[in-house]
Length: 189
Image (cartoon, rainbow, N blue to C red):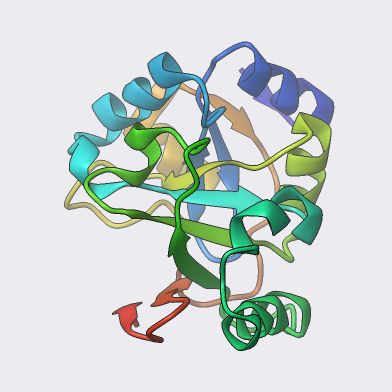
């Protein structure tokens, strides 16, 4: 299925289906993070080991605020500032944050932390809002290949195995950088 309807795309996620969609810099694959079967389908499509974990993508602070409550105030503010003061063309930042018990182990992989990003990409914001929560976000590509940067590239990788929400990529030239919220360690530059 190919759609430009955010409501239809959110419905796919609610039905446990995998969705390819444009993000800030590359196309992503997403699903309901609490639907293990959908998540395992993403791993199968990407040929990705479960140990690696994935990113949770949110549209607004309220969707992930509970994940930030155990951070020291200055670390919490650094995370919030990176999401709220980011220019549209600027590279997005994903933060590793201690995972709450509510975050499924398959999302974290072998890690005690979960990768979280609040997006400023209008289509991703609309999608998370329509879904009423955060979603899985991992690059749309099989392991070892370059992330898809167009609908055509995503379709060439996954064909009819996924649903597609057509739209434009954001203005960022590179996938989000990943930092540890406490140590500041750069995981992905």
